Length: 343
Image 1: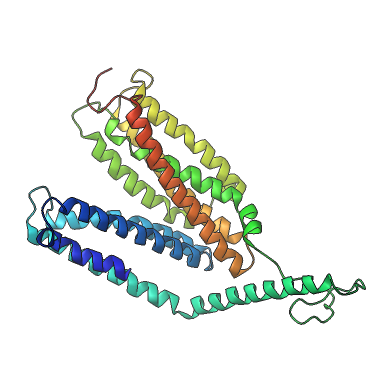
Image 2 (image 1 turned 45 degrees about the vertical axis):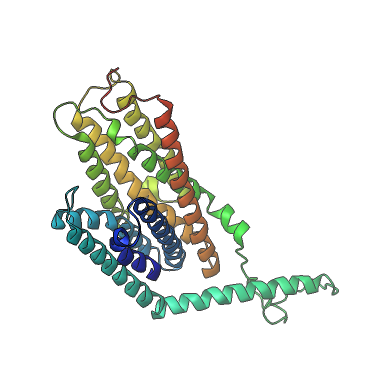
């Protein structure tokens, strides 16, 4: 976060520090670095949140959507557009740096809180117990066996009813949370891929439907995340069910692209396509929270939950990357008419 703050404070002065021809390249490099640091923070936060109670996941996932709200608000307040003054641009970057600084302060408070320190200790204990069990198993291969289970931490005979140490390594965690990873991949991939084609929607009237669809997606996705804290219907009670919902949700994406690519297939109505995007996006936010929450709840140790957060985040990022690449490929293929073209 400190690197992001430094870059935000540096970017307004790029035009004064480099030649005019190099300004776009320097700005692009800064944005690449900010994006990389952003995803690094995203992954770390996901790993930490996986060790907290399940209710924390809805709050974190809701927070992930607020930067877009912040951007809309600050641009409106400052009136930033193609004719914005240099002072307004500097103000925007400095306020954004301040917001990131508040995020850094909040992050430090969370990491140094008593619950977080307790979860860190439990995670380390889980790793230590796993190492002790591995060593015990290696030793048992060299010692005679008399059919008595041993405590992996002390080597003494295990008391009746005491369970062996639960080993939740990466292979075990990946197998257990596989449905949640499939659900989050389908959910994020379809959301980003579809959003790339909002500009291709032909309005039924004079309304700028592209802007309406953008804000519909933004606020619907945001609303869907805290909805995960409400009582859940019977068909959203476990990770196997949310995979089925994620697959069923793809049908709305087909409706969206059918509306764009085949004008005669659906009635030309701005309300119709806005409702489709609204339902599609609410489900996106809702399933995002449930996928992370059910994944973390599938593990018993803090070490396993930490690995779970890492795997879920890597799946999330893979979905984002492949969706962007796929949308560019489809756009360049010419299969869908460019905005403004008539069939």
